[in-house]
Image (cartoon, rainbow, N blue to C red; front, side):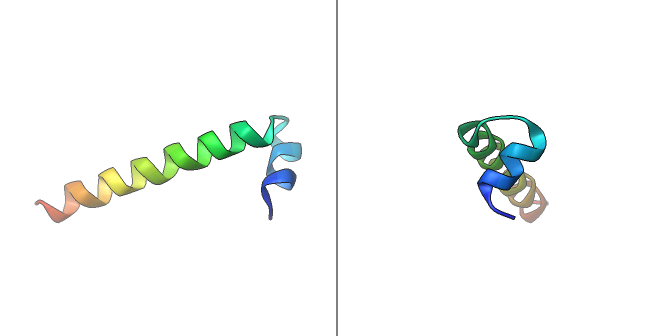
Length: 38
């Protein structure tokens, strides 16, 4: 599924899809780093 398809399904712009994706990646990275420090 590409960014245009996701945007159409969610009813948002492609820019917003990119923002959501970036936030999810940052969150996942943060959680992984927390687990590695335990």
